[in-house]
Amino acid sequence: MKTKNRFFDFKIGLAGAIVMGIVVFSINYYGTKNLTGGITAALKQATYTFFFGGSIMKICENVAIGIKNKRNALIAAVIVPSTVSLLLTFGMHNLKGTPKPLASTIPTAIFVIPSTAVWGMRKRKQFDLQKKNIISEETA
Image 1: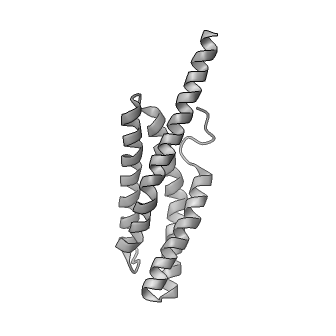
Image 2: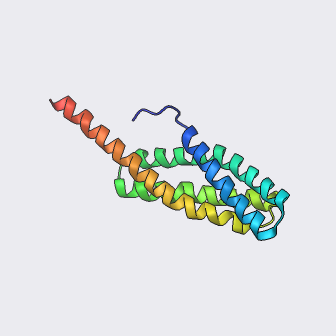
Image 3: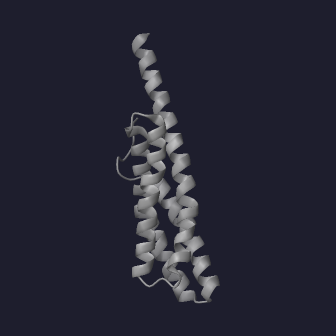
């Protein structure tokens, strides 16, 4: 499967940054009425999500196509990147003084688990189809 960058997905990183920045701002601002805290949390989350989200989704893709057994690949493609993402998100919010670090981590859990499941299945399906087409062309 051809990819533009083996370690980072720019489009997914950008989309995730926008969505998660808005969600984290809303949680922190409306939970505390602290505009500065809400903006700070949102900017940290957006920056983090861009860099780490783009990388984590690429990890998901690489795991989904890198493990031979499809079932194991799809399970690992959810568990590995989701766990890394949740630990990094909570750690960042906790260490940097986000007003509500646990509450700011919940959206990551809500988004990352289904996102990695869908992304892993999508990439594995594309990979299997491409592999099948290559085999068909070789036998033709």
